[in-house]
Length: 340
Image (tube, rainbow, N blue to C red; front, side, top):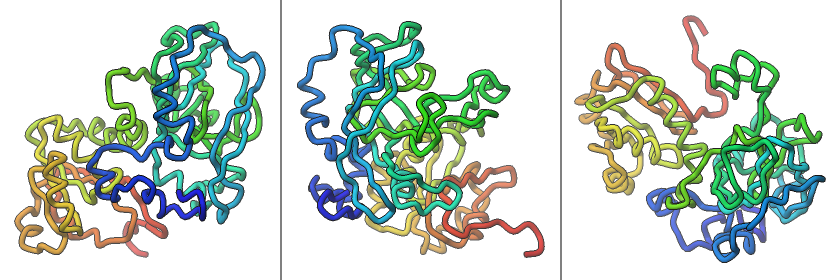
């Protein structure tokens, strides 16, 4: 976001990178551009903390958020909770920008109204600054990742089945969710630091590209989930509708499993990008001959387009036992079963 006017469309102007270049380059416009001194240069130059000194009281950190749906993102101070026995305190190095963040900042999702002030960000990569006394998976200096959740009850049927997002007592999400521990609402990763229950911190190898890893904590798991659920494997045909933030990851993942991936796009300029990302074929929606040729060919279609479009041409592409997975619904979308 432009720090001068608050316009989200200006976010790339300071990077000199096109939107398409951002996707192909792989991964994420990181919060470092917003965080400035807490961004990449500072994070890389600062030595890892040498000792575990967990905060015993709530402590302040700088963060970037907004106070209303029409106000710009500005720097502010927020409070993080004291570090409990099972908590991990991360210094945020990178935080990818997800479109869900933009929806939340603009308060345009009726099912999840925004409580302001709001600090978003849920594709978080950080270095462990301190750990609670009962933490076993991390030590100071390790790299950890945090996605869309911070906590859950850990004891209900859903949590025990590994579906903490459906916690029967209500999961605690990374931002704009009531904080059951410290009160108020949770604040996300566009900040210098965050405190998270150990169970919800993922170990990240320090040898990987940390900036490119950040989007895997949202776009990655979002597109990985249907592939895992439907057991995508080598030889299957997977179609990805739309090549953007979700779509570029949705191409890479099945291709890495040996699946035959086709991207469907409205943008001729993205055809070469689709091939570079691993797609065997890239088809323009306007290519009626190609759409007819591919009828009944696909085992799985993944839709990543957040705008209304005609579904029937794509339904025609599905095989008799195929699946359709939609991960970007648009305003007013509804499926009618039978009479309207």
